[in-house]
View 1 (cartoon, helix red, strand yellow):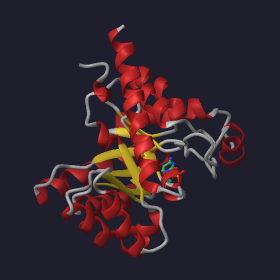
View 2 (cartoon, rainbow, N blue to C red):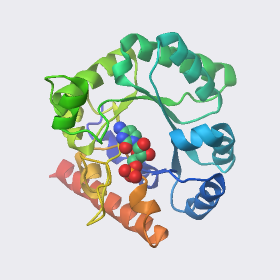
View 3 (cartoon, helix red, strand yellow):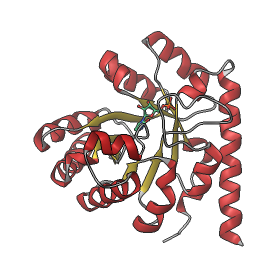
Length: 257
Ligand code: C5P
């Protein structure tokens, strides 16, 4: 097993653009503009609710990849049914909340495998959301009434998600090194909470630059506002891709030294 598996993937695929825009026309024109630079698109709750299936269909027809960020969290059978439908669209990643429990996650996995098999599609990666990047230790304690700090909670949830059949997790870049060490090189790690230079944190708490997240071992970084709010979106993407390459080269150098 290659300890540095994440280094070998196509670098352009490591950036997932979060399509967090208010209307469908803007989403479609954004995709056309970004398709030469970005292969992976995250369809989140807003656009899923507006017109998810049509948007996913368009992305697939253009040969682009889709992270269906529905963050399902319900009783196991309901999540089974939802994941069955999501996998029918041919998405490449779908996620559930790890807090939904091992039974829910194992049902999600079973649904994905059954549905993809029936449709003769590659099954999407099943990701479990650990602790949202908008939480820090204080807000986690205040909301969830737990004595676990963020890191301990992320590790516990990631371990149980893996045991239940998840292919990977969504976490903050701050937990990558710990999870790589504890869960091995093949467990997929997807990290939002990415910020470049002096850009606003917005509502994110546990943030990191693209370069450091990739150098730490993130398989995919999810970026929305740092690109969407930029004066020049293409330039913002080019800078992030440059950072991804630098982070990748740093990690490779460390591996070879
Ligand atoms: O704008 P920004 O880059 O902060 O957006 C991050 C995106 O990643 C948002 O669409 C958000 O819903 C998503 N996300 C997250 N934290 C998670 C899972 C998904 O921020 N744990």
